[in-house]
Amino acid sequence: MFLAWAQGYISGANSLTPEFFFDLNAKTPGEMRRYLRQYCNAHPLADYTDGVWELMKSLPTVKRGN
Image (cartoon, rainbow, N blue to C red; front, side, top):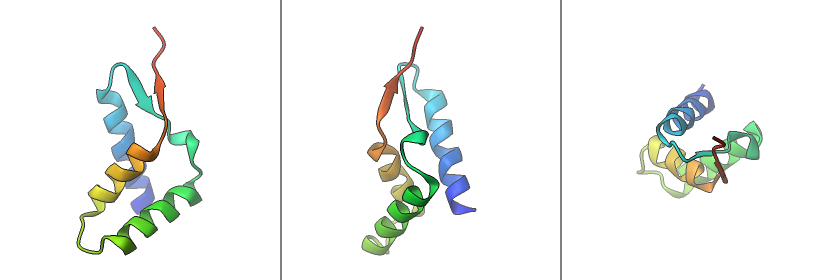
């Protein structure tokens, strides 16, 4: 459930960036779960949203076509 929320959050952010998007297909769901688990373990006092933001920034960006 948490991964689905993270993917929805990133999709929402993608809808706000007219020039590029964060490629959610660049990592498998398992890789995303591991990334978030590692982030949360390393930052136990951080909000989950902080981890999702870092996951998003770790994804490659793709320029939108016209």
